[in-house]
Image (cartoon, rainbow, N blue to C red; front, side, top):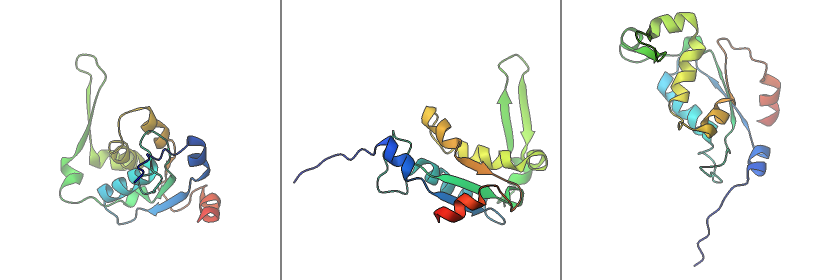
Length: 144
């Protein structure tokens, strides 16, 4: 029995990209993030190759209506550090949702991707919007 490893070509992967639209209204943030990360990486495809960018485009709408379980809205916070002494910044999730809910969804997805150059390319295909309307409606409708 012949066992051959299949390697998807980057050129062919770019031609096979599809568009996925997720309406986040009432959906749990973590569930949206895992599904989105799977589509961005291309793990749902039988031609998945881990070192080739074979994922799809993902559009997330209604980011401001995303649902959080438990007491996350009060207890979760985002931490960043400038690298200088006293440069810690702590932002509560509640304040981040008021400021820019798109960033909450983006960070949830980004942290589910590997930390490498390929993930940065994949994140470029993620489009997040606060409302129902988005400029990719024509492209997404054509592909589906």
